[in-house]
Amino acid sequence: MNIKSFDDLDITDPIMFGLVFSNKHIAKPFIEHLLGIEIDHLETPVPEAVLSYDAEHKGVRYDVFARETNENGETIRSFDLEMQMVDTKELPQRARYYQSVGDGVALSKGSFYTNLKEQYIIFLCPMDIFGRDFPAYHFENRAREDFNVTLNDLTYKNYYIFTRYKDFKDPVVNAYMKYFATRNVDSRETKTINDQVSYYKADTLIRNRYMTFEYDLYESKEKGKAEAKLEMATAMLADGEPIEKIVKYSGLSEKKVLELKP
Image 1: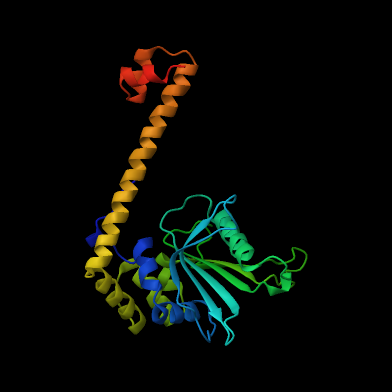
Image 2: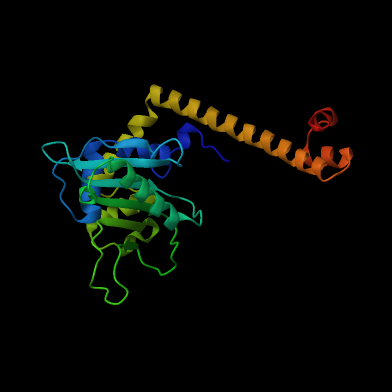
């Protein structure tokens, strides 16, 4: 796990992306241009938003979660923005689960399914995980028998390949994607983003928060390594492996290995 120093963070780091796009004046025009829609009122986006059904189900952590609401505060549409720099080989399945958790949280007990609103899961990626050389992929459920027939379940999963920024025809979207790919500022919108990145990098409170986050990640990594060593040693003991071999491969001391013996 390579953890960047705070000074090296940029917009493609999920923590910085979340901070910057939690600002309504940045997230709103971005979503509008990306999806070709108009948003009446966007609730303040939430960075690193955690949603889950309950304690028994796996929760999800969205990079940025935002809702469009009407004058009564009711959700009209919801948006999940994800900056995804690595192909983890399960992004389609992750999008599926993100959508399902969002639906489960939105639909309270006793509610009607018709209360489910438009939901967009948006991944911003440098790599083309589908390998068809399109700058963007827009998915919605359609009938195989006739692609003109949509399921109309109001769920959309979009993947934008920002390294193909030259292929985006809309000049504003092109500038956004070029900024993600190169950090070059070519528009009013990307200047606003870049200024916000600079603002956060100069903010002592944000820097201290990140240092704590960085330390927690390190501690988590070390804890995981220690647990893995113990699991390896325990399994090798159960298989009857000699103590010397277990010490060599697990990295534990002989005393620690002997303590694990039943």
